[in-house]
Image (spheres, rainbow, N blue to C red):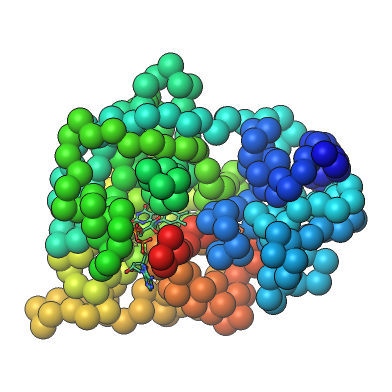
Length: 333
Ligand SMILES: Cc1cc2nc3c(=O)[nH]c(=O)nc-3n(C[C@H](O)[C@H](O)[C@H](O)COP(=O)(O)OP(=O)(O)OC[C@H]3O[C@@H](n4cnc5c(N)ncnc54)[C@H](O)[C@@H]3O)c2cc1C
Ligand code: FES
């Protein structure tokens, strides 16, 4: 089997990459977390500059629209030794990916289409995560669905998910209609690099629907750090009843000065007197200049793409200050 070396700069981490392993899988397996989200070529969160070396893609076709000298690490397979510009990769490995059986402990419908699910993972598996990360649920046929943890990692062995029932969705409809306490699920993780940075820039959190889940984890885990930086959370939905955790978010906003909450509805009924329209446009209206802020956006891929584009081109947000987890779905998976 051919082995090439993949090196991450500036941390100088060097890893052997064997056979058809992608650059991202090589790093994750060794406990390193380069930037990524969907892990299947759809969200572009893993687009990374190649400082030297060459890669190929499993399909032999490079993804469309890549910037010059860049690759998608979740798809790229080295054909020479490769050096990557990955300032987010630390010099020591972090947590390992764990495969485990998880026992459902609670299933609560909290709105017309959102279920809050809690599961327990045996503590002896060593499973831990960072606020903002997600795990894969591995289905019987081996396909996977990803769900972000909404709880604080301090709750050892516990996971809380917010799962929206998608029309025609195989797993999310099963969750909404049939999942019950004591059921067993196979999970694998944690994955994802949507975690709070060490910067001190003021924060904008932006979510649509269950995109609130990883932001809830950050709010629960890092409340004081977030309050010290100053943060506004914009949460978008169609109708008021879709904002399934209003009480909790209002309490969060009142819990410290420097925290604000702006709900935004795209299809409100007539007695709604709050903000309306597209959620990212509400941010732009309040912050026409985002050059000194950091944005965390999560949820619907269309919302995320629109926000990324508008914030960069119209509001001066530096590229590396837009962090996102796009809830891409794979039709027919
Ligand atoms: C990093 C990440 C984190 C995520 N976190 C969350 C989270 O916290 N909460 C959450 O609710 N979701 C989250 N998601 C989305 C989640 O992983 C699933 O994609 C989602 O729940 C749908 O899964 P499903 O099995 O119900 O739908 P699927 O069966 O995979 O179908 C997806 C959609 O495609 C349509 N479809 C299916 N088959 C076809 C076909 N043949 N032709 C056309 N259309 C078709 C379905 O109707 C449905 O609308 C996340 C995704 C990612 C990538
Ligand atoms: S495109 Fe690579 S992680 Fe989404």
